[in-house]
Length: 355
Image (tube, rainbow, N blue to C red; front, top):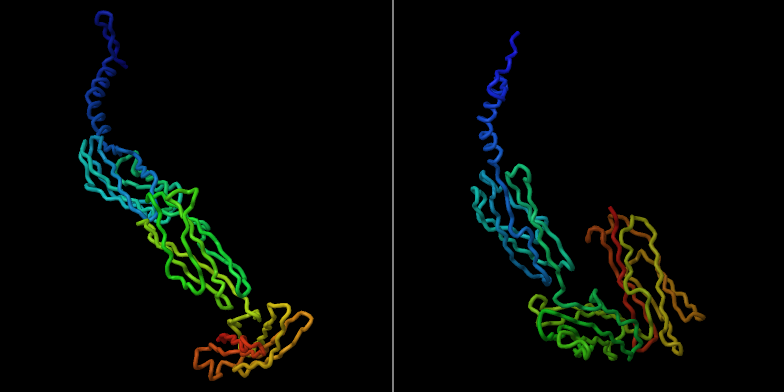
């Protein structure tokens, strides 16, 4: 068989089959190159959005340019974000080669605290990178730093005529001078005042919360609303609780057996004691308006305590009280003493019959 013997031309030798294949490849190579180059290419400028230091409960906007640096049309299929705090708006979703569009990103700092990284995800028809991520960065600060952080104060258990105080510290970087105005509280129960911070400058202030020594006996709870001149944090609510001990202290102010089965035994003990060691009292009587309960009085002179025990059995589901109030039964335990100012204690008693 003839294998195409090389023909010599000067010093060069050619093989005709190889020459033909070479010419064919040269003829097709531009077509292959053109197909390979006809792809979109997304360029994001800038490729990250840094909002810097921001404060809580504020919104901020930054922009990026999306540009198609490829040779085919870029189709932006959708824009998603990693958090509801970031919203992305796009002017155009189809970009011809060398075209660009504006991406507007709005970030809401909500109640975040510290360094935050969120993501805007751009889904396109770019073959190598169908999803591009644009990081959104922010360092979120509190408009007003409050210490204690939980904004709850407990002034303790106080004897009648005693007082207790706590100081709440406020600091801001938002306004040049911090202004505070306490409102809503009852001045018969609390004394609240604003004092400057000598070493902290005009952006800091102190709030002094003090129990009124004339507050009546019992447990007290107050909300102090502190109005401020910081637009993004116009007020701060402080929860204040304390107890002024009466001459006679009762261990329970409410008895709740919660869910009980019909016929289930229910029992509870209450203790009364004098808060003044040199004074004594007597329980002169007790009564309860729930007939299923029996009440017993036990005096413990050595401990200066009187124990009130109630015990009973839950009624059936067809009890008129249960049918009238969907199984909820409630009444009152009344305790009578010989104390001139605390002659009677009323203790609610409740339970719910389980069906």
